[in-house]
Every structure is written in C-alpha cells, then in structure tokens.
Image (cartoon, rainbow, N blue to C red):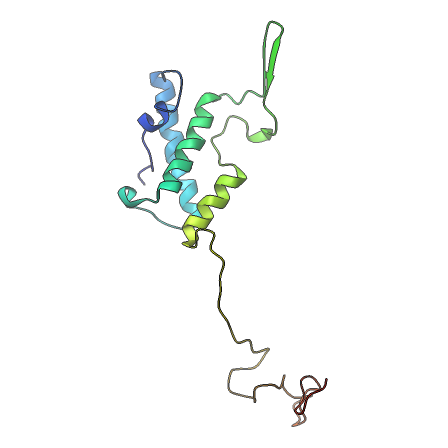
Length: 156
C-alpha cells in the first residue's frame, strides 16, 4: 500500500541533506511505518489524501527520528565529549513508534480520539433477555425460587 508520507516530508524536518541511499532507506521506513500504523489502528486508510493529520504527522516524526540515527547508535564519543541515547534497547536502528505515538494512532483509529464512552447497557448473566423478570438474578437449581439477591420487597 501507499505510504502516508514522502521522503520530502522527512527531509524538511532534518538539518542535513539525505544522500540517495539514505533517501531510499527513509522511503522504505515510511512504507513500513505506514503499514504498522494501519495495523495498530486496525484501519486500511487506503485513501492517503484523506488520512487524519495526526497519523500522517506521527509517521513522519517516527521516520525523522530514525533518519537522525539510522545505525541505531546508543553511544557516541568524539574526543572528550560523549553522547548517549537512553532506553533505545534492542530495537535500536529500526524505525518504530514510541508508546505515546502508538496510543495516539490507536485513538484516531478507534474514532474516539480520546473521548470517553457515556452510555448505559443492560447485562444478563447466563440467561437470554426476556426469560426472567427484572430484579431477579435467576433461579436456584432450576426451581422457581428466586436466587437470594435483590429479592422483592427489598433486602439481600
């Protein structure tokens, strides 16, 4: 399927120019990240032009982050200066989403975008609806005596 963004979208966010090999790698990463976003959100999103902007931006951010450190270095030393990336783990060098990005993609895929569910449901335990009067939980051993919870006239 078509990736959610192009190499130019990543290039605009970098402070260096991608070589031809790097641009090819970024293109593959964009395709991989787009497919992963589809899986995370459980959506096809085949019409890339109508893709929700938060998803497109998240894919571009993840690809840009990976383009800055394609080799997955976790430590860099130059003279007396040392730079270390924390929490990169064994997936270093692979384009991937952060936990926050995954949560965002899932929320957009659900269509809720973080809105809570407000509603009411009626629950029946082990019995089809309509087979007993409301207020009873059923019968004891198939008899006609109501189970001893929520008895008529109150009380437990």
